[in-house]
Image (tube, rainbow, N blue to C red; front, side):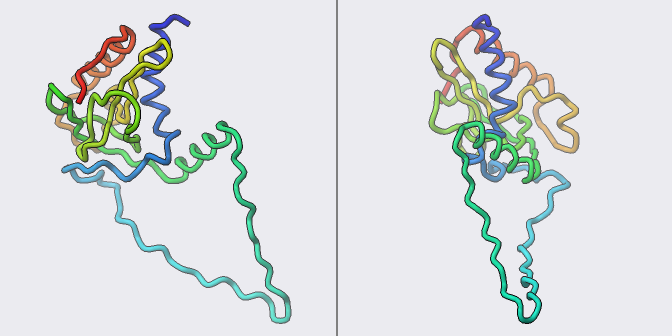
Length: 187
């Protein structure tokens, strides 16, 4: 596979698939001044239920489940994806800051913060990394916790200050930069 094709795929797959594979770094939505989506509901306290009593004169049985035995990376990733599917999806317009070009609102859907690898090229409102870049082997990789490539249909019900065209143009910049192996301004 040519180097440029691999770099473009790394950018696209990193932004689309990475959120499902990083449950340990996921948290609630990044701090933002915008109200959450209208379908969001406040969390309610869990209800406790009394365990049903057994028949009189019969011993109670415990149903201890065995601990998970996730030995391979494939098992761990599959389990993490399943957990994420069960949690529901939170989406929001998040203001992302850049070191030299101000801010842009981008589509965020349970994306991770990307601390610990690469140079930071954008940040969430709480200051954690939203996008990073760096070398991996002989290639150049850009990882994104937000989706600048999000089409207008993904934005339904959310309020953005940045146009779809501006976000898509930035997505093109990310792909071109990754394909050429050049750096973006970083913090």
